Image 1: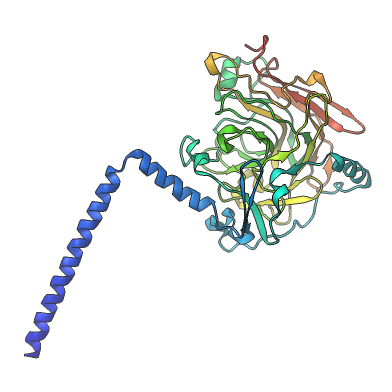
Image 2 (image 1 turned 90 degrees about the horizontal axis):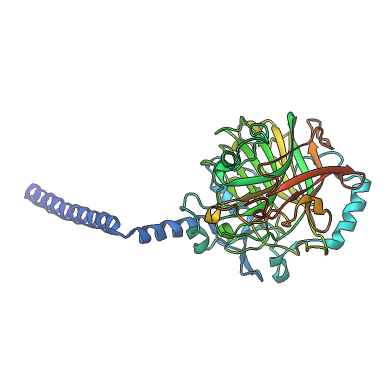
Length: 430
């Protein structure tokens, strides 16, 4: 009798399990069917919200910036870098093992103390600061992601956006040179092993003709064959309506280890750069900016390799050590850089079949000089012995000098310097 009862119970349980299994399959198929029938817009919105959740970590505090940005103070151990599988158990390096030699000699300290009179800050600072053990991150909005060509490409540069002075002679056909739509006016050094670079650049708010164009001024730390294996670390200021939704001048960084294909991103929009500073937000507006025939405001940027740990560090201004790119992100730059570039870059989308009027730098040509043209001054490189020194054999490069140009010089105050930039479209640049 007990056996019969047990047998009936097993049949009942089996029947119930079968019913549940049937319901589960029906619901799953219905869910898949609904997902398949979802309009593309709904699927995209779902992808965008997932991406926003990944980027916007829960804040300890939020600060409203006068320009409309929200700056989230995120605990240092919760920043996007630690989404990277190789950084799960990473111990944050709270300071570099050493700075380059020659960074803080007495003459530079005197000069830099004068520069503080014309100091630049970030707009969000007027409404508060982030507490210790947090870092400030500009909150990504839904519209920011929707402006990108796809969720996957959000926060990434287009490929072929690196200036290649060695492989493109001045006599090259401009149509071939500008195939990528990116144009440059740069100074560069090559032919050695480099372990960092520094420069002071004045900050402007160039006018952008089309929202899908940008104008930036930056340092490039480069390694590789300049093919698909290119490694690049970049830092400077930019105006990019597509990325930020406005025409504000903003501090930015960028990195890639495969020529802008799959790896890397701007600022903290992917896992990579580890920030340790609670005062400066990547991608946030910087203010004030230089004015034509008026006050000039500049920023100093230093990127150097900690040869003990292998990480690449970045410093902004007179002492804001922002953080580092771990060496494992790179192949060639895990050792050293083979080329350093300083200068400007714009996107020329050739609206109406003509050259863009998007400005580079101040929008003036280099010969206009101080107070009118944009400049890089005190450009330096870091050598194998960790010495900050003047670069040798500086070259210059621009695809179309009648649109944007560059002129170098040197003196006792500015060391090696150059003026660069231009208006883009003009009678000599149709």
